[in-house]
Image 1 (cartoon, rainbow, N blue to C red):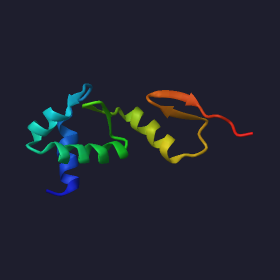
Image 2 (image 1 turned 180 degrees about the horizontal axis):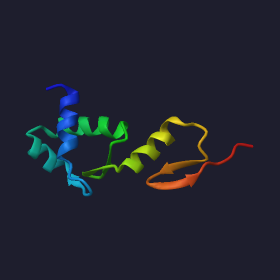
Image 3 (image 1 turned 180 degrees about the vertical axis):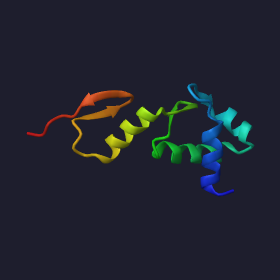
Length: 92
C-alpha cells in the first residue's frame, strides 16, 4: 500500500474529538506498529494530528491553521511550545 493510502486510512480511523492508542490504530487498520508510527509522523509533520505518549488525536481546523501559520510564517509575534502559546522573544 502507498504511504498516502496508509496515511488516509489511519487519519480516518482516529475518532473525532478524542484520542486513540497507537496499538488500537494498528489493530483496527491491520497494520504493524512501525508502519502506523511512520504514518503518524507524516501526519503530524503535516499539522493534522498530535501525538502524546502512546496516543494520538486529530487537530481541529483552528489548531491546524495556527500550527501551519507558526510553521511557515516567520514574522508572527507568537509561537507554540508544548501546547502553550508564547510571545516570541524580541531580538535586541
